[in-house]
Length: 587
Image (cartoon, rainbow, N blue to C red; front, top):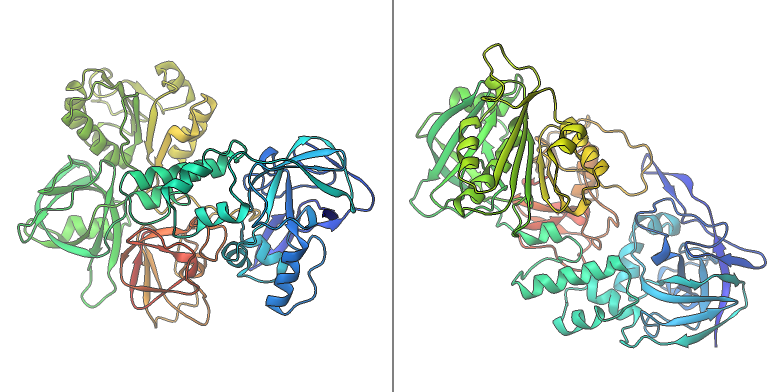
């Protein structure tokens, strides 16, 4: 007979961890007496990170006393009390290998339904004082599971757990957990799990992505965990390319056309992708790595990059002053997941300044196919002198059956003409977007300075644009994702003050900085990136979730520990890799 041994609740608290503050509700304590099980959670319970925990699909987390005893034996410990794994219900007699997604149980006066396995994160490592626990829970097939509350009611320790209904499509919690996180994703099992009506929407999307990738020929990576990173794998390394032409596009933007040195075709890029340049501005000095979007048409004969010359920009200044036609530069293969997606719906290209470069390549692609989609380009610039590609963009728009553009100049010059050079003075704003009429079903491609990106995202959100249709490109790195970290300030990436100038050099290409690897100070490249204030994404920190998956531009790494499911070819999970020599990471 299955029994409820303990009901555990706790409200979020702040805990100190690695010189940071984590806001978490993983500390749970047993309830004395009866407890009300509501639709969203138990009375007296709360979650610090509502994006990853709690809510209707994850109202109650369940863990087994048998698994607690298993971990005590494996880890040689005896201190795992009720609630030690963050569970709301400590139960007996319902192993993950027997409970199925969609099974229903009566406990006390409440009715529950199993929705998904637990998604482990670093916080269970903090709670148990075992940093590797997220990977251990997942790899062992003992993750625990979540209940949805179908009928609210009272529960209490000692209540019998009675199965009242079984899922029509039987797949256990352990099987579903392995199907997502292991390297094996059989098509028949993916189809099977997607027939389970009770499966939570988040897990359903992951399995749908895995099924889609399996049927479209993607052979590496886990699209269910890192869909963007796994969709466009790139072989690491650099290729020498010749500078065939240099053109001035505006007062501070120059374009460089690059062609093959040996006559072999270039790798075709997807509209919106970028390449990484390895530059050698000083003889014997460390190289500089810079990412530049491809701004021309898709071609296997040439790449065009466009560079904004910043006042104190080392790479841009060196390219403008030292590089000439005929010189050879080291260039990576095209990479990046900010790409024009197929479809026949409206497209909005929303850019400012040099942010025009990736969306211009999308416009080239749309024009080349004589697309009949509705296409709107909104661009912001200072004035005509600082408006690159103006003539080129107008020519491409005129070739489209349903293309239109809208240009704002923040400070138009005395010779700039409204109606000829620009459409309105000022800035792009929510009011402007509303007046123009952004189609709600449009895919929006957004690129520009950080403040512009933030303003446009807020404006699009206020206009009820679906988040899944807003695609953004960030020049310097990417948006950080550090769940539960409270009040983390944004800092400019820079090498750590204790960089010893010895050991392998780890370069973070998109952030434009490099630091030397110190095995005594850092357990992973992720920890080194954090020491450099490079924006990073992570959740488990043990090779499970793939949030940290990043491109390996060059070099070799070793894993410690090995991830449960390897990343896409050409990518690495920075939370559990160390450099074997000099490496370049695409963050």
